[in-house]
Image (cartoon, rainbow, N blue to C red; front, top):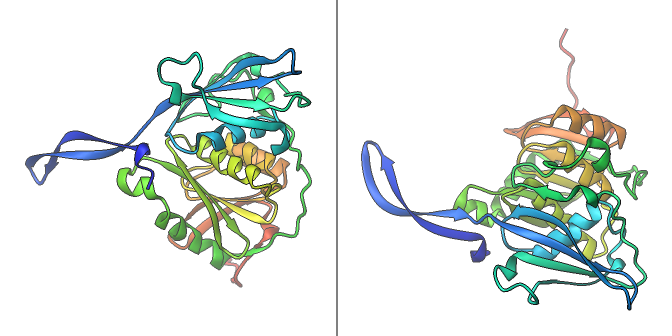
Length: 288
């Protein structure tokens, strides 16, 4: 368990009309500023790219994943180093992380002029327009031979729940999980922000040179928003399953990218909203 992601605070608990002084475990929420260093050796620049409210932990993965899913960098080779700021940061230095790019890497910063500010509840808050975040994926046409059974899908939420370490203590975190087509769990990342959890996951996959993730399944512990589908598309993911509901714009984007989008995956049921051809369905009789 990542203890730095949890804080215990005193509470008064009311049970059956009686009160007791105790403590409760809460998921930590703190800002993370992402800075980018880039440019030729004699003309290096440092630019603030984003401030996001996140749960501490896997910050380097979060920064890498964010830069990739926003289209600012295109590959792990672009990154020379990622580390927390220890220079000119007298306070809260653990909440500033700097990504240093190679000298020959030119970041795509055309969309950063809007000054990203994201909250834990909404990763698209403060962005100028839908067009600004509708980044074209480097894997817009991944291989389309990923097929999974409906029975395997039913197993995934239970596997994820067993590995949500911080959620088990706090009940207050979102999770993104990456599975193989055979149902093997590869990665789980948690955060107070659902978009951060996915950026951490994709950042880890980027660092491991796993992209594109066209042979994997992405499982979301909550709802499927437009931004989560956009980030998944950037990583080449073509099967997304969510425990909660998708939004109408998420369905629209999934259809555009030919992504299989599944919602309400719980209690031995789910809905398929787009690209149903990747799901091997059980035989059924059509009611008339």
